[in-house]
Image 1: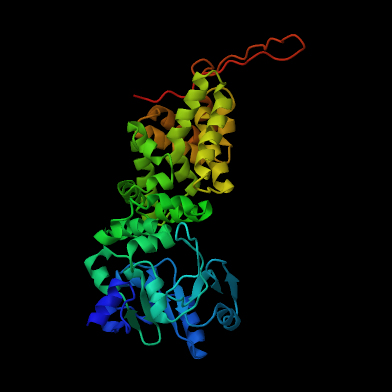
Image 2 (image 1 turned 120 degrees about the vertical axis):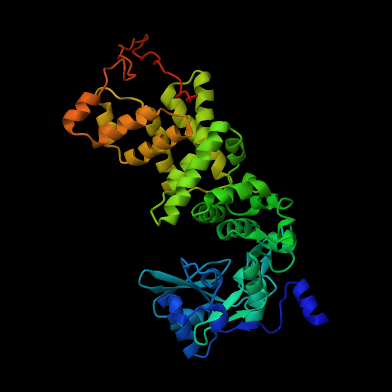
Length: 448
């Protein structure tokens, strides 16, 4: 009894797992994906142990359909790659195998030892981790108890070393082992705790939650590209609004979107961000496509607005100031969060369309309508109107214009002065033929 208590205090779990038969968990082998079932069958037929692990087992026990399935085994990555015909070796810090079955990719990992591999002495972060071990050690290395469940398709049983089934029933997110040490090994675990709690509607165990605010600065040691991947999972979880609120409550938002706290403190900005997150959650729940670029453009828009206004107040031209403001804001973000260029390019196009959508005269609306990002720019304008910072009448005009016949569009166009277009003025030539400065108006004024 004392030995079992010591093992649990130090996160080692029980020497033998608690075994739950089919009647206790309800997961039939038909409930898991074809690819994960096939990987387990192949490896087991060659004398290896193989289990479906992690979030898939957790979700199935909660009655949720998993998005992907992972497999853990005592076979080495090289053995898995050799036995599974369509597969590839990936990873440096964690060497894994991706097994390919049509559109499905099954991630296969080898059991890892309880002691990590290469560790940064200053931060405690694990840098390289290809030290292999047994199933019990592998369970001890997993992040949370609800993710340390092993499902064997052959026997349809669930193996539990760390009372994960109990925590599922209690709706608790609890880290395995000492929270401070585990967060130092991998600070991203703090993000995952928040994401899981928000996604599942669980509470975070007090001992797991206690050191998060204290260790939040460790997020600065996480590579920006990896941080972006985790942030994307969080924002596209279908519970983005709850996740952001939890991030703020735990003091983690400074390490992700450094400007998010500033945005959320602005009355209009806070409403705008919450609407964007709520719309994203709704689309995820309805299984509709979601654009990460649109979401990040929404999160950072009010910082772009502030930087834009500061530049025009200093005398810069309206459009050059907008592009400079975009770069300024994105440069601050990419220090901590490596937003890929394929997203930042789209974000800039959405932002740049906003002043162009104000113009409703001449031939310009036709050019805007043909822009490849028009729909995203229009949806962004509608979001701004819903939050109270843009004109609802302008949104309605563009709705009618894009849906109208050629005759109806022509009738909708406003005279040049009403449409906000300035008359073209002849540019005075300076001595030597250089054109004079161009007139530039301020950024859009936020609606009251």
